[in-house]
Length: 292
Image (cartoon, rainbow, N blue to C red; front, side, top):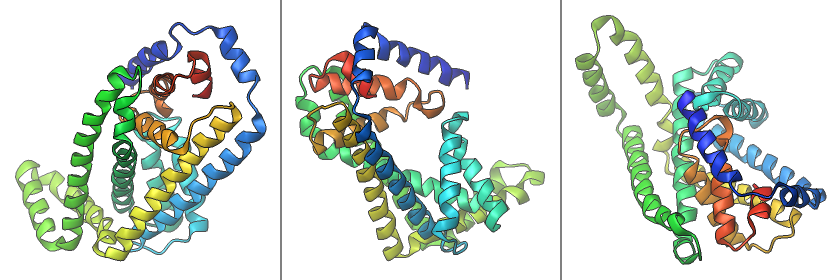
């Protein structure tokens, strides 16, 4: 928690460094607020799609309606913006347990799968626009994010393959997991940890179905395209001239930087990364910070 606050403080300093506050205020005053309304609508459509995706992931555990999942998803994202360490994900699993009696460890497994698919898509946005990133004038250290994105893509894809193999071959995976737990933990802890692990494995079973896995990938891509739609809406509100590909890259880079642990809601890391990327697009500092 304290490390996150320190990191956020450093990034907030970078975000507000050498900013003329009168010009920042003028930028905010000139925002065409009407253009933010479609952005909010697009964002909540994205939340509906997240609920749709979670329904696919939860199928092996229990069939839960999108109507039930939508408010729980929103509760979880509220938690991520308030509590440290993305504890909103745990909050989401707890609320689902109370309302639908789905095991917490099983739903946590589905949330981990969500995060892996999200990471793959977001990093894909960066890699698809890698040429644009490298060629940005004044991008400086941002260009190095290309190699970081390549490494991150490899890591998350390896994790996804491991989860798919676990889902396709659950019995061998279970035996290996039980053996590891038996060797590493004292006897009094083994039973509850094994029970937790078994329910976690149950949460991966949606990946056994190629159709389900495809739908999870499809909905994940749709979610992040809709999120880019929110970026487009703010782009319109400030009268900027960024195209959708540039906004995809902005979205991808900002979310890549959000992997750095910080205070809740990506305080500071989001702002500094957004300002740096927009400045690389030759947008003045005050307008760039106003955008973020």
